[in-house]
Image 1 (cartoon, rainbow, N blue to C red):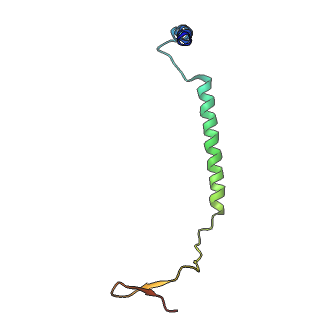
Image 2: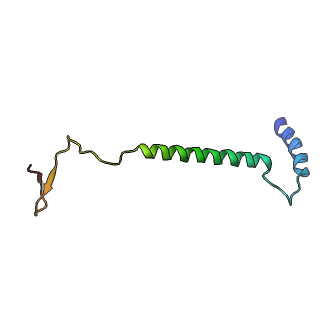
Image 3: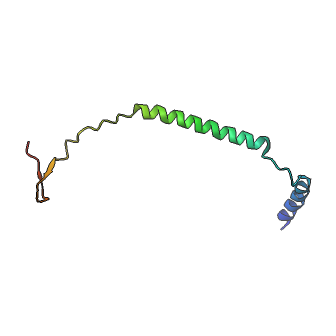
Length: 80
């Protein structure tokens, strides 16, 4: 009970000092925004680097047997 009372006595004078018509994010808000912007820039740069390394050509899988579908809709092994 005494902790909440102490916090109330500390917060009320600080809240009364603020101008209720002019509240801005301040320096801390700018710093947080700048750090987030730099993080997004770094992630995008890293993603572009990794996407450049990706080989989009699909290699055929030897374990999957090729099949064909006849006119009746039945699936049969492909003749090679």
